[in-house]
Length: 219
Image 1 (spheres, one colour):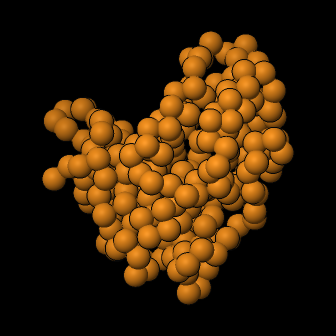
Image 2 (cartoon, rainbow, N blue to C red):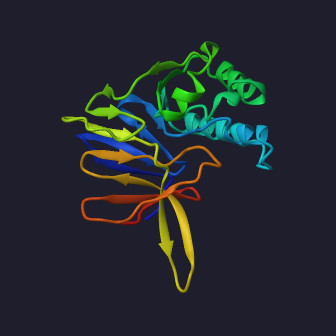
């Protein structure tokens, strides 16, 4: 059965896996996003690589749709907000500033990831609170990478999990996925142009695909 979101029970809380590769916590009205990588395409263009334009604008439009569909008091980025230092200037920063002005009342938290450490914290005018990992929130530990956090269920990203569906012959479909284990949940990368790492099915691991406006159990 597929749907725009799918409810799961983790650490005694109900969380929604969203088809647009994000996580929603209804009790806290919190929207969690991992690996936005704003400015990644622009960073590659600085290096002379012919990559698509408009990824930042499209990602921000997707966030706006989620904010409309899911009442949100706090938006939480689980690491890798900016891809690299070139994202701190030019069109990427201008788009982020314009988006923030439209959402001035929204509380935003960033849990630093590895790209944030190299790109630097978001500019102060974006009004984003930046914290280190793990960041405790209720029964969860908010992280970028999966860390050992005894007594808390880890919510993280970093690996950009994908699941490979195999058909007849050599048919293969790589699908962004949520990967849930007893101690940790991996979110798919939210940003476009991010790639991913294949996740295999194994005992004790639940995998949920997110593609084309639906979420469903894969393994």
